[in-house]
Length: 339
Length: 294
Image (tube, rainbow over all chains, first blue to last red; front, side, top):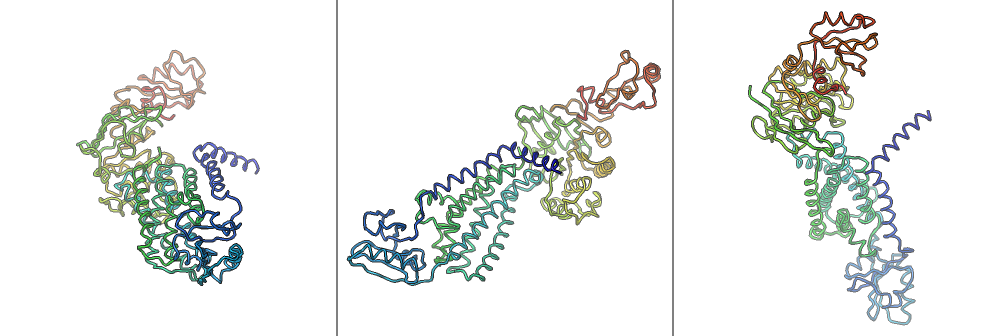
């Protein structure tokens, strides 16, 4: 028995090692992941509190007020008072302050963290005059915030692997070659794959959303129609991205490696599990190249902030441009058969 | 008969290997044209260039006098050597899928009867035997009522009975007036099915014509085959060929009586002797120095 197990074990290892392209990706991906995560999260102990500072600039200068030197507090710039007050109401900021004399601050009396950070503020202010405003509001629960991220992540995996991987398998086993010999055009094949996956995505996402919403009473402040448009355009952009990855690849292991290389950064940087607010500017700029970032920004704006269609036009525009670009590239480099 | 297909000076170069070296031939309407040669001769590459799957590096392909294009795709049917079909689809669904890709449509019932798929219509593609699968692939090649059908090594891997059944099927298709282009490394298949053949080796056509004409042109003799084990004496004075892989010797002769008299004292017995007409394999061996079955 051991001999047979070893024979198959050995043959599989030879197969893996000799597939140089997939071997490379199996090494490169974890290394890239390691470096990426250490860059993003390598900045020491994360802060316990988040305080918004009302100002026009992009950076908060610690020397401008004693309170800004408080340890374990992240100070983020807030350019718009309404936006800041909304975040305090939703417990997304523990406190909002305006540093001009007299110092004014906004706090949600129902926020436990707001309660404690207020003490630190008053202590640092000393005898100076301080103005307080209270804002009440229902917290945005983590589930309200993370639900679009989870649905988006599911959509991402389904679109990329469900289309990209399948196209590679079709190419490898000769089915694409068989289709090539018919009057079927590349565009028709791609459109059919896209339509099939899109239909599946819409149905599954709607089903999961409906179920989660019913069980957990998740927040939905905006229009379902707008959300549907975002979902459809988002799925199209992700499917198109998958087609670019799969356009010429023949090895299923390489395809898996490439698709993981695309999906893992998106999972980390597109705001699926946590907000990138307060991270370095380069991290936020990098996140902007991923379709999932724009899908989640738009979806959260609708679901949590009640944004209407014109409010999410920028994200929709970006998704349309990305889709057009990916589809064009995929069509130009698509190969029907293995080399 | 008009020419349906013409290939002119086709060339295909891969890194380190000239797979197809200035190949030219034409196929007349209603005939079965065979490309015969060993594995690696360039048959499949040639046919895939004609089918439009692989672009030629140079050369011209004409279908009914025009460069191949949409009309060719509509009117040609192709059975590839190695191809997969969609998993989880049944035979019926597969045939319908491919038929829906064409404007021209054959009578599906007729194709199913011709290819003996009636009992398999609801079977998953993954559960078909080799012979059943080849019949399905042929049916898929016929869904568009093609004028020209390409069969690329259609009986490779089939047992002898399945091969013969497939030959009968091909003959029926040819009898309906369909033009066929067949690639094969089985000389018996080429002899049975083809009206005209081109023998390929190392990317070139080395002989072309009807099987009978090629053999008559080359041979007036018969071939005597004997197992090597039965040879006990010196055969130096008798012109012969040793086929180590098969363990036989072959003697080509136009005077069987004299040859047998010369052989008798040099062999342990003649019980295992065979006398046959020369075939395409003999022709290939004479032209190239190696066997069709490499």
